[in-house]
Structure formats: structure tokens, C-alpha cells
Image (cartoon, rainbow over all chains, first blue to last red; front, side):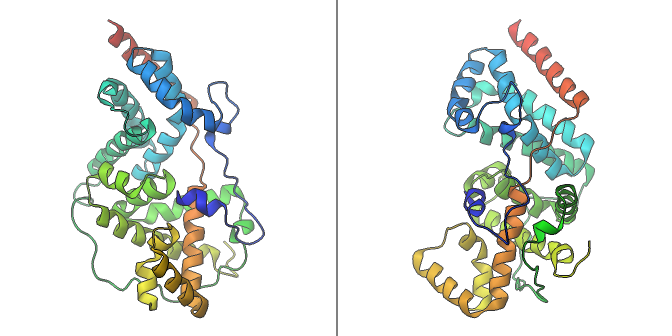
Length: 229
Length: 79
């Protein structure tokens, strides 16, 4: 996974952001991440056989990540809350159809992404269609490159950095944002992202490249050397 | 490999999906081209900042609403 690979690299003097996994948050319902992955299929099997507490444990485990996903796609609090809740309710209703050949979390992300996209389309009718080709042959080469200097992460407090990231992702067109969120934040594979969104693998790759370049460019105004905000 | 090729292959490069020969060629270009090196480094940094972002805590009332709805669903399923 890219995230894991990138975390092994260092930029500047070190990382301001912790890569804290939500599973490490002190909570009696949450387990260490290694255990979490290993026992996920056991919880799913128990939930499928009617153990409601097993399903509730899966919800406890993933609710914060799914809420981040629906927030990132809809960029609207009310829609994100509704999409998250409906995703969990639908996943419970359709649990028997889950084949177990993929991770439960990936299956859940797919349901949640669709719930979020449905709300996004309702809120912005006519402005957003994942099916239409949006890629052209435009020159992607960035212009007027600015040096970010060493370790821009260290120039901002964690809250401030969170606001910067939220602001730049908010400006990204939904088509690009959705692909970026699934690939680079939720860490789905290219194929899983294509499958979840019902688009081709080349379309995922093309939109991901454009999303990354656009976000890099938007971060320029905050990170370029000498920037004060 | 020219600058435009580097940008086209940027995602494949940072995702580790380039074949060995293309990777070597791209890395050779980066040694000579400071602009492309800047784009590659900043794009990697951009992705890393986002992939480090933490999940969002559910406000108490949202979490209660979710779990109450689930419990109602569990009851329906049990009948």
C-alpha cells in the first residue's frame, strides 16, 4: 500500500502527524490492529450466524473511518451522518450476501461510498456524474513550481494542518475527490476503487493522477517557502 | 523519458507500479531535472499528509442514533 510505503520515507526533520490508527485509541471495544485484521472474518462469520454483538463490534471498529469517508465524499455534515448510518444498516441487512472473498471493510467502504455519492448527486444535481469521461489530453505539467522548504508540516499545528487539508480537498471536483479518497485515504486498490465506483481501471488511474496533482498545486499556497498562513 | 512522460507516470512511480526499466529511466531523469524532482517530492508529501489523516470521532448524539437504529434492526431480524 502506498500509505505504508510513504510512512517509511522521511521528509524534513520528522513527522508532525502521528500515523495513529483509530484502533489504538483507548476504548474497551477496540483491539490492536493486527488482531483486528485477523479476527475480522470471525466477527463477520458470527454476525452472519445471527450474533448481533459481533456486528456491533464491527461497527465500533469502523464507524470513525466510515464517517471520515462519508464526510470526505459529501463535504456536508448532515449527509455524511445519514450516509454513514444507512451504510451500516444496509450492510447488516445484506450481510448474508457478503461472500467473504474480499475484506469486510472493503465491502463496507463500497456501500458507504455509494450512500455518500447518492446524497452528493441529490445535493448537486447535474454537476456530478462519475460515468462521464472527464479526462482530456490537457498538459498536466505543473507550472510556476514553488519550493515548500524543509518540513512544511512542522510550520503548522495539527489542528491548522487539518483545516488546510479539509479546505483543499473541499475545492477538488467530486469526480477526482471520490477516487482520491478511496485510493489514498481509505487505501483501496485501483481495482477495488474501479469496482466500487463502477468505472474502469484506466479511469481510476487517470483521475487519481489528476487529483494528486491538483491537491499538490492547491497546497502550494500554504506550503511555499515564506508563506505565512 | 521527458518531463511530460514523468508526469504521466507519476502515480505509477509513487505507487511502485512501474516496471524496473521505466523506474530506472524515471529516476535518471529526476537526478537531472530539479522541476520534476520537486513535483514528485511534493506529490508524495501531499499523498502522505492525507493518508495520515485520522478517522473522525462521531459526536455523541450521532453515535447514539446509529447504535439505537442498529439495535432496532437487530430486534426486527430476531423476530
